Length: 257
Ligand code: DAK
Image 1 (tube, rainbow, N blue to C red):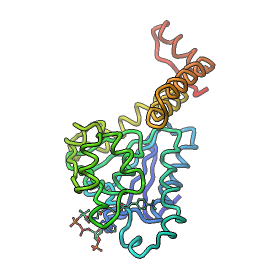
Image 2 (cartoon, helix red, strand yellow):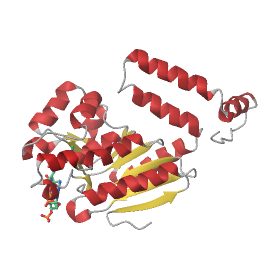
Image 3 (cartoon, protein in one colour):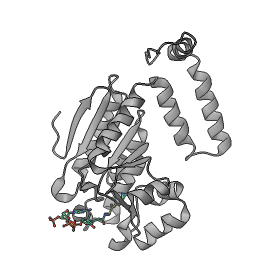
Image 4 (spheres, rainbow, N blue to C red):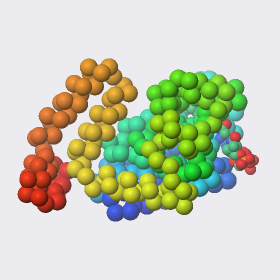
């Protein structure tokens, strides 16, 4: 499939999506978001793919929603548009999605990275929610996911004072998994994704869902969800195979069944 604003490729069991609007710092317009979700959905449905990486360029992961496209919008147009619905498509992916971030991850770009399951950052990555500088606030999860990730104090500064986090600060505050030199961030994300993609697919899926439940439910509900997922895995061939392989001192062969 050929797209206008993204590039896609597969690397063994990893699907790679590259945002590709270099002249606009990968600003998220309707076409880009539609194409991103289309590609993500296709990789998610492909049984040969075990994990997905979303990246931008070295200069910009994404500088936010397209301000030029949004500037004259009415409240009703924003409400009835598909921006948030499309955004929710990232959260709905069953397979792990890893953001490989370099340069600017601002506004909707930061929200996009935070919608992924893990973030690998280059040393030049900059995370920010600058919406306050254009008279609005984050609208695609920025106030919620950021606060859960970095805590209230830092989130308030980012949302109210336009504080930008360096890659090192983002790691220190728990927003990103790891920071690596710019020439390595994509390879590192692809390696992390390949590792996930080599593991038992149903356990990966339920592990991801269970961790994400921690952000969406009470502790009691989250524990209940985790326990049921754990019991369910004992009905899979992969649990039998994984434990037999351990006992027989060999590598397991996963079937995803
Ligand atoms: N939108 C459109 N174009 C952008 C852009 C953006 N977000 N960011 C950069 N560009 C464009 C610039 O306009 C410029 O284009 P030309 O003027 O050359 O045509 C080109 O990219 C290069 O940018 P600069 O010349 O500004 O490059 P610099 O290196 O000087 O600065 C920068 C890079 C990333 C610091 C700067 O461009 C910048 O501050 N960009 C804006 C960052 C920003 O404010 N982001 C937040 C956007 S608001 C919603 C929920 C959420 C949202 C929307 C809807 N719903 C619930 C419906 C999200 C909102 C946002 O993200």
